[in-house]
Length: 402
Image (cartoon, rainbow, N blue to C red):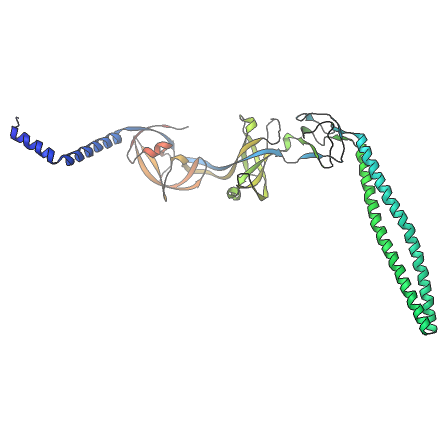
């Protein structure tokens, strides 16, 4: 059909007059067609089934290896190290000699302690003579006072009265002097006993200048060398036993209420990256601590089974601590849930399409969540980040996750 020139001009004029309207209509048509194409496209997704599982919740806490019973040996006396018999890391048997102390320095300490004892004893002995003299003086003054009292009773004259008063004052002064000497002697006697005890300790140390291992295990030697001068109480070494290993986990204070004694934990140690170790919670500290980053934590002790690995103190790692478990509960993967304000949804697969389905959830584990309503056993749900790209009715192709 031919269009006349006049009709063509009318169409052109209409187009010019309604240009904006026509552009808007064109954009709407393009959007509609684009939406239809998207809704008709097939999206590949991962899926999993709704089924009965054991749902477990863990928390992760960092920490380091230590020992439950620390066989830690300290210097029994100030002395010079003569010889170190083993290296740190050596396998040690109970009774092995680890450090030999310089006997000459120990002998000097013993002699010094004995000299202090003799000085204290001499001081006590000197007071013995003074005390005996003071006792005799007090007895003599008492006899004089008693005689003055009898004369005063026989004759109440002023002279006898004054004589009695003077004798009484002299006797009381003698008693006071005696008591002062007795108190001082008691103090000196305690000093004598203390110095004698120190002498016995020094003598014992002299006879035990060889410091031995108290238990079998690996030697963790402090930074010591032959010739070092020790101070009493300095830490010398520890004995580390595989059977006595423990992992100290720093648990955030907000999670501590969920931690329970005897619950299992899985531990990964940085030094043994290819291994996972099993443990059991044995203790929870009774006080909090502040970390270098300002966090408030509670130390939790975990009995550590190293499965034959070399026990080393201070290795860093992390522990997955079980804080909840529900057995044989209908559940869905955690990453299948769409959290939307107060409601939760999943995408359930029906043949080649999905339906957005509201669900009610219960106990939340790390990987799975107990589902109370909304789906049934055997339903297939979409998992993973693809849930963010789906709409109700979207077409999908899928494979099941293992």
